[in-house]
Image 1 (cartoon, one colour):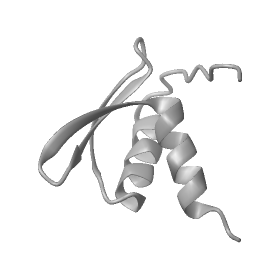
Image 2 (cartoon, helix red, strand yellow):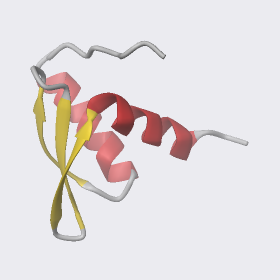
Image 3 (cartoon, rainbow, N blue to C red):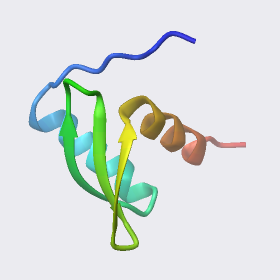
Length: 65
């Protein structure tokens, strides 16, 4: 599988990542475009995800079966 590389498209990208995190029950904290990581809060704990992992989890959660 090819690694996905997300560009830092500014505030719009952060808004979309925040929406994905909220849908998954997490709070968006920040995005590091150089490391391709997203910082989130879940049940009071800080978590760092690779962006492609967060997107994959979101896609799986929103998949209509």
